[in-house]
Amino acid sequence: MQVLQAHYALENEDLWRLATGLGAGIGRQGYVCGALTGGSIACGLVLGRLRNSSKEDRYALRDETYAKVQELTRRFRERFGSVVCRELTGCDFLTPEGQRRFKAEGVLQSTCLPAVRLVVEAVPELCGRG
Image 1 (cartoon, helix red, strand yellow):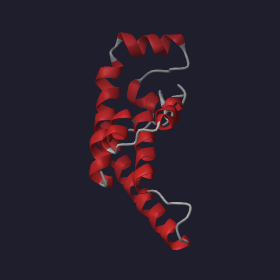
Image 2 (cartoon, rainbow, N blue to C red):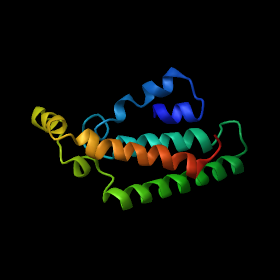
Image 3 (cartoon, one colour):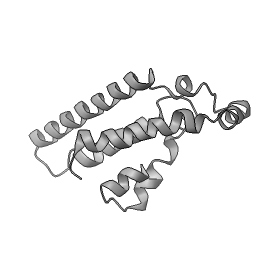
Image 4 (cartoon, rainbow, N blue to C red):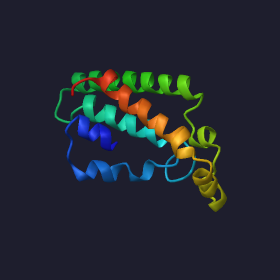
């Protein structure tokens, strides 16, 4: 999220705080990868609907955002085989053992950073405007 904030010159501290709960598959629960979730939020920030827009414009912006998020998800799944954190990392982050395994086996470097890299490269390509 931080790299995309810099790319799009979004300096609001609230955006960084917004992403806090996404890590380890949404609050360590092992669900959807936080990098992919953050990328989806970034797509919404760049393309998303505006409250003051006409109804037609809001629908068009929503549909465009959904299409880009679907493509981002397709690329992610194609590259990594899953979008589920627990499947990607092999770690149960709700347990101390899973957290130790994450560190001991270098999962951050082998799995998480490549996932973040894919998202950071794909969002500007897909969404432009920056």
